[in-house]
Every structure is written in structure tokens, then in C-alpha cells.
Length: 276
Image (cartoon, rainbow, N blue to C red):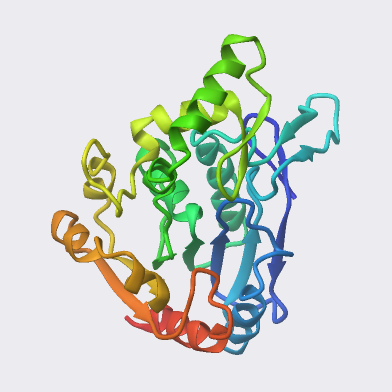
């Protein structure tokens, strides 16, 4: 359990059975991603254990739809959190604290694996935090272009109008359904209009934020499931406009959640981490 600089309590799960590993992998989940819902993580933990790599599943304040940051001392904030209210700026507080925690454990190598919107959070963090963690390997699993995906929905303008009406009527925290997720009206409008959030614009690079990708010089491996690469026709064009330090891999027979290919995914990830 850690407390962020803005006094939010976050929980994580550290798997270190041997207590003598020099290497750890930090896992950053996506929208509503948590230890209960990410089934493929079980296989990662077991595979990494065989390679003597510790594993930290780090909850962020967006790991659940709506949750509560437990107040454990008078100075802590008793605050409702979750994807319904999460801002992209929160990633700086959350990820910074988890990296600081890992540094106290004196690992020689710290790797990062993200899933879905967790990749966007990491990109934003690396561009907006003055804390610079020393990272060994970075892998983004199925990074999600949430902004363009949402704006491509047929009901986008109707959803936006509903959110704006709620705000104008004095109900900015009223929840609206945004496809597969819920957000407060204000959170939705702020996210859709914030160019910095659109830092993985794989569906549409117009009016996007490619600067963040250009600023990261470390090699980054991108893994998508084959079902995703078959569906996202814009990947080849996207590869042409981003730096060459981003390497793409398509995992056969895999979807966004890697159901049924957990062992294959684990093998690929271990090979990436072990590759010098």
C-alpha cells in the first residue's frame, strides 16, 4: 500500500516468493483494470517466478469504475476515485509513487508492462513528471486510442451533448454512459478536449499529440493481439509517423484481453525482458 503526493491511498500486489530477485516488473493496468479482472496476469506471475523476476501489480486510481481512497490517517484524503472521475494528470501522482516504492526495494532492473489505457498513462507520465525512473524494458500491451475510438462512435455527439447539458445545469459529476465505460460529465468533456490525452493516436493522427512519442528515446515494444491488428487498418500508417524505437509485434490468435493465449504471451514477454 502506498500514498501518493496528493494523499491518495493505492494498493498493489507484489509477488516475490524467492526474496532474492534483482529484477522486478511493474504492471500498469488500463481502464478499470485490476488484479481481479486481468486474468492473463496469473500466467505472467507464474512464468516470471520461474525466471526469478518479481512482479508488482499496481492499482491506480482508475483501477475500478468507482472506488474509495481509504482514509488511514488524519492528513489523508477520503476521496471517491475511479475511472468515472480520473484525470490523465493523476497518472503522474500514481506512477511516480509506485516507481519510488520499487526503488526502495533496491532492484537492479525495473521493467514496465502496461495494458490498454495504462500505456497512455505511462506515455503521459514519462513526458510530464520530473521524476525520471531508470527503466530496463518497456512493453505496451494493446495500447488503446481511447479518444479517437470514442469519437468514432455513432452516438459520440449525443453523448457529448448530454454531458454538456449536465454541466450547464450544475451537475458536472452526473454519470453518463460512454460506450463500454461510464464517466462523470465533466471528466468526459475534459478528456475528449485535452490534446495531451490523445498521445497514442493510432486510429487518427490528425490533431493529435505525437510530440510525446517523439520525446521518449528508449526502445519500446508494442504488442497487439492478431484480432486487433486485423481490425486496426491504420497501424502501418501509424508506424510511419512515429519514431523507429517503437517495435510492433502481433500475437497470433489473440484479442485485447489475450484470452486463451496467456502462455504464449508470457513466453513472448520473458523473451523480451531477457533480450540484452
